[in-house]
Length: 283
Image: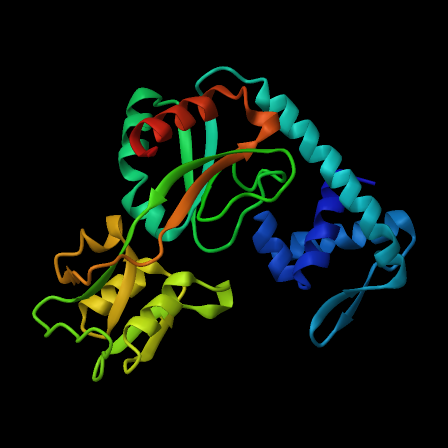
């Protein structure tokens, strides 16, 4: 039984398809199918049942899942421990953040870091998904909420101010009204956002015309005249087609947190990036 086959078993169990597992592991579809059959041959058990909706675990697969996850955690812990001993400034460092944070706040940090440490390869993964630090999906993460995972060293990095914006040249909406205006807000599938409720209360006669999970998209849509939006100030203030409304109060802000796994606290390239991020961004 090969650990690489266990990883494939876990990926198929989590994604439900060979294609999804292949994309997650950066392998080909045939390779995933072949290695899964090899694992089933080695164990003498059928681990998945193929259905019209994808692959579902059999009873034997369900019984194997917990042990496979324990193997994965042990392998990840070993990987983190060994990687954390590296003090040299070379290798790969994976960073994850929201789209807007990666686009508007991290560039000066990354520019200085790549100049100072040219042998370190940086990967910046942006989006709304919280990547796992324990599984080394990323080495350092920036988030708009505190980390809840175990063994994460975290720091409140920035108290991020937000503003209300509308397309330049358009008549400004009347406070307490907003009739005739649309609103561009966050997608509710990501949870609740205080600024969405705040914006609706501020302009009760305006209607939500667009929801998006991407602040950069919201900025561009608002600049095109789609509607009023709330944006982090580093995003909205840099949009030449937008005007920030002076309404006497600011939207609810958010704290930005930086975190990394405890096992990597001595990793040289991570420590150097953390120090630069604090120097450039910490409030």
